[in-house]
Length: 585
Image 1 (cartoon, rainbow, N blue to C red):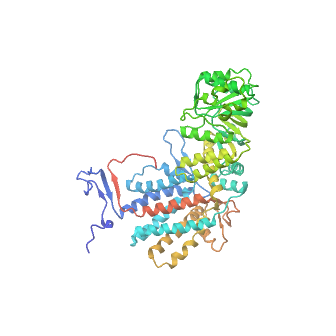
Image 2: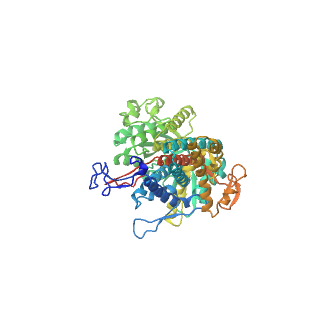
Image 3: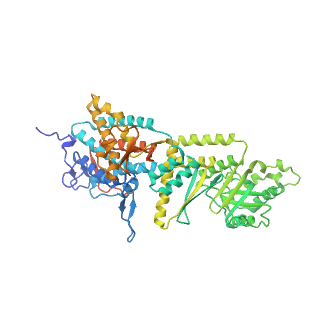
């Protein structure tokens, strides 16, 4: 029987100089820039080789009992980089010697890095499920199954699993559970305990500033009110306070703007008007201050009677500066002056402000300046403590920000809105991480930031039993379809997913030194029971403190199933003669 030359599985790999194709000339250079085409079955086998390389490098990092991957540094003499995060490990894999396998490696690398960017965790579980689904799916396609129908059934099975995970999700409660979740993520008990305490105080939207410490211990402070990362434009403005490089002003007036304040003659009338009105202090916020203006402020000989501190407007772009000013305006009651609107500093003073005999309560600057109970300013940040009686405007502003964050499509915009919400809600903390070794200190700082993201997600989206048991428990949602469906493709898809749901649990047990028999002991165990990989005992995962963030587990499952299902539909690999070099996933 003659093979069909048009069937993709009967076509050999085509090298540019060995077998010319419609896309290549005899020299192999190619009219369309194509150097080589690879057809089935070589295409799928090559993709599988690349997927196996990446996933097998990440597999040892799954679970609370993990190992690390050493990555050589580009500079001579530097020690290797030790990694235990699947997303970072995948990103370090950039160019496999086999170009066909490299395509499979880059396919899974992209999926894992995107997951890491979005969630910061869950990449190892997604990797092993991706590998399992692709490997088992190839068996179905090789046996005559249709790749497109199999993909459709896999995605339908994904929806069944996600529904089951939704029913299993529960809220996270209390400092102890937050600390347990933090330890599952960062594997650092001391750091986890501090983060649990902090997030029990600041909540989902609270501000957390992670810094390098000056001692070997991990220290934390809670901040009053709302703060921004902008300090006094001159350290001399902070002298005379109770603390070095820090000044506190009570019942302070505040002028908000994104103006370049360069003319002294515009500032002096405002200062005179404030002093005649009996004001004791002023916080001046502007985008830029000239040397003459700074010297004018520092020329104040009686700061105990009237103190002025100038800070730059927070934000790196015009949009960010306007957003921060609008938040401060709601908190303080001020009317900001905007450069884009043509405002000037004289706008806040007006003609009557510098005139004698005018009632101070009716002067124009009263409507532009805000008032806060307390202002504190340091070299790198300043904060406001407000006690405004009218909370309606603040509540409406907060509701608007929450709605904008819910519909935000850009990740950076969503994070920025979250920061603004945290400032308004008022919960703020500074975590100072110290260590004897600078490298280890930097690693702990990075771990603290990643763990903080997961804790925020847990407070927002809830938690699931950890140790892979949540995914393992979802098998019951698929078992009926796997046994009773008349559609052979659907049955095959459900069986593929059943095996994939077991893979994280089996990998965790293997990494902890237990064999597959340990997984079999879960048959008949109660709901939520799993293998504590630290002790090998069958126990309730929530009581043992083994917890996963619900949204992270769902994202990992989506990434694995949708990515592997799409990869199963790839029939041909095409290599360009001169591919564009890129190390960005």
